[in-house]
Length: 260
Ligand code: ADP
Ligand code: MG
Image 1 (cartoon, rainbow, N blue to C red):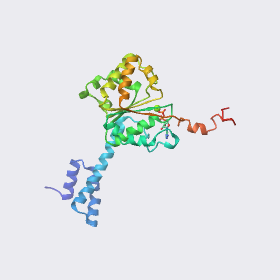
Image 2 (image 1 turned 90 degrees about the horizontal axis):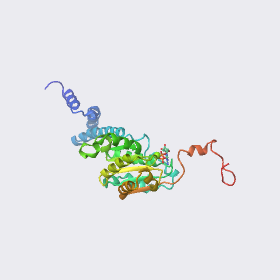
Image 3 (image 1 turned 30 degrees about the vertical axis):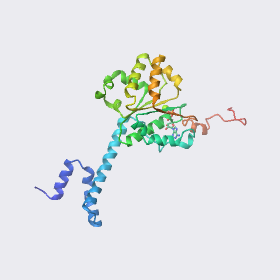
Image 4 (image 1 turned 90 degrees about the vertical axis):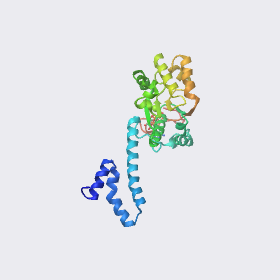
């Protein structure tokens, strides 16, 4: 053996890529000596740092791969602004049992009430639980399904379409062509009772039928999406207009309460 024990240890830790153990070693050694830590305690402290760093890096990777919009978390959501939202139900969903049970979550409501924010916030919870998430819009999803048929064979699934949770934002903005609706049906059927979806829409389910075109196909899609689904209808003011309403740009209310 060559070199000092310190040099050899450094070499081993580098080869094993135990970056945090390597960094923490001098400090933890001093601490152990000063405070009389046992060998097990010393080892635990070193490994704790390594595990914490790896968890953090894994979360970062999951968040990047998910394409979730940045900063939309439960912590940044102001529940006080939207009293129709059942806070307890959101926290229940944040516990992720819906994901274990392969259930869907559907957020409905007018623009700006926080549907996408809450969908993304649940996505962040899933990443924090070390599971994969993929954020897309219905429009982008059908384009992707068109170009990449790998999703039809689960063993060959690639990229985001393999994720534990797929969030489909903006269902119902644009009507799908028959071929696209068909692809979406196959996609929904493929995940049915096997993996969760979260969908957001500012249209109600009758309008969804129009989005999916032909009525039998629309019924088949809705049937599978809604069979095991948590449906959250949010009513209220647009958060986007919150600041606008307070500003001088907003029309002032007259004495009777109407706009002037
Ligand atoms: P929707 O999808 O319902 O149209 P979004 O979730 O995109 O609305 O919300 C619009 C914007 O307002 C986003 O930037 C979102 O982060 C923010 N927002 C909406 N509701 C809230 C809320 N209750 N607390 C904090 N931010 C909110
Ligand atoms: Mg939205």
